[in-house]
Amino acid sequence: MHNIFSLIELGDAGIDTAAKNADIKKISYIDVNERMVFIFWRKVTVNVYGE
Image 1 (cartoon, rainbow, N blue to C red):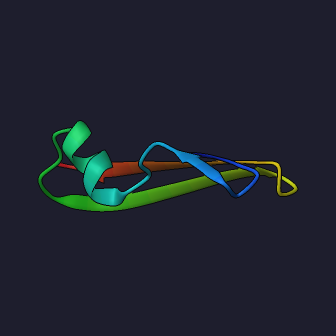
Image 2: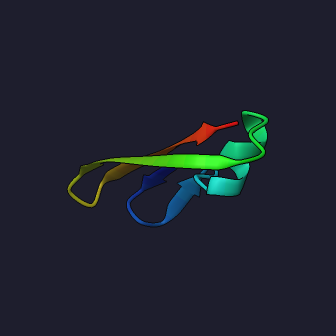
């Protein structure tokens, strides 16, 4: 998910979406990374691990 000026948000950083994209049925670990430059730009990445 990208967020620009807290006004425009693009993408989906949901756990369910990440699991469906990776074809994971049983989630064992979730990793969330966030990068931010003041209030101008923010990127959230969700990694889901499992079977």
